[in-house]
Length: 174
Image (cartoon, rainbow, N blue to C red; front, side, top):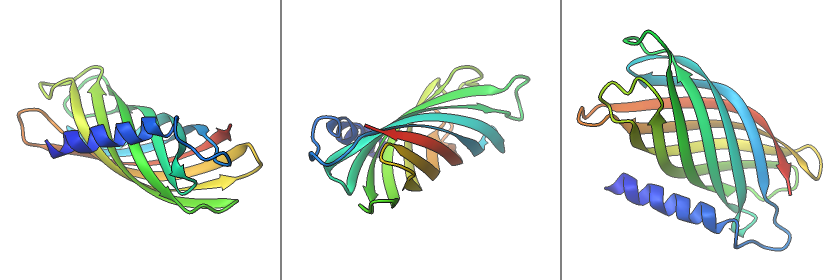
């Protein structure tokens, strides 16, 4: 129940970011690639792709971040990779500097198994935390590096799955 409240609150605040912002604040869309070190049905490292949209909630230091990511996990009891997708929202506290903007975030959302759910349930709630850095290369181009920790439950097993994601990407401010 607590995970549902965190996920709903995070998504609400992230959606709020698109409607409430200071005139000098900017929104960002970014694409990223990296690796997900997972512990699901077996452990390993999988390629990861993500697209994220960020924007100020109340000031330039408090951001809402909505993201979609995709990973292809090589789990030990499957013959084909397990394809997963995550839809997630975070609230991020960012140092409001001009060029280097480190941030920390917390949020939640949902992970979906596109195949090989293995009785885990196709969709599960997630909770996540992130630590990252945005670097303004120009007035519209941002470089972004991030580590995101995520956990989700496998239905009816009581087993907690987890992943540590390391991504790098490019963002465009508008």
